[in-house]
Image (cartoon, one colour):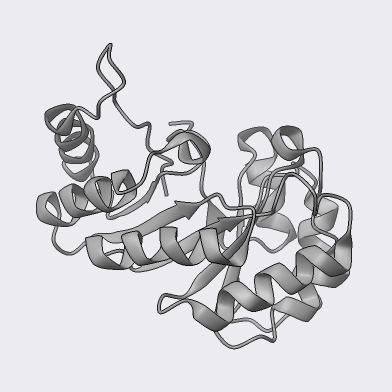
Length: 202
């Protein structure tokens, strides 16, 4: 599943036609699943309602696509607002980044954050750990615990560590979707038990 860029003009406004072009270009090559507003899509920097706009365009462009929308929030309230935007736009699920400020490194607080988010989300939730960007890696034990939570259906693990993938795959149910997010380790991650990859590489 490709992680799409978000096209902006020089003033910082979203370029709808460029977004449609990128979606159509990939659709014509057989792609039917997309991550919108993730790290590659400038997710942490999107303004209010931009998620809804991006997802709406994607849904209008490819009606039968699986659309995963990135959420980058420091609180359950912020996450709920972004998830509402994704829901209004027609997303199928959300990819929720680990908090990066006061909660970073406090495993119990981060775990509580995801539990709270799952409790308010109308959409299925994928966990997202990307330590190279956030400086924090969601512990495997926390992933295994959260994988039993209603509404939490998978993870994008961008640690680049296939051993972590193997540990998770061996401890969660088969229907918990594990996606690798590090292109360099994608093949080994799939061998280790990942269902596939969500990356910006082609």
